[in-house]
Image (spheres, rainbow, N blue to C red):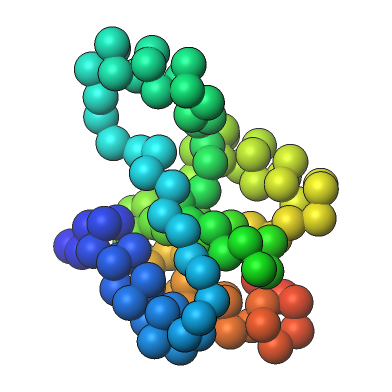
Length: 114
């Protein structure tokens, strides 16, 4: 099974080739951390549920999941709703291929959210 990390790496590689010059930023918000590090990051402004990637020019957030078995948490759903409420878009990509398809749909017609 391909990991979420590998799916995201493949997607970012595709995105940068397809949209050269468009900035895509990774938000390294996930992963397991010890309690001291978690407290320090929270104090610095880390917020649970922030999507994995952000495209500032398009106000587009992308949450990457494995193609099979990836689930969206309650925190991720709540933050996606909040972001969309202020005019941003959120795409949940279940694998690199799904995320790529949804980005193309978003660029063509504004489709592609949760």
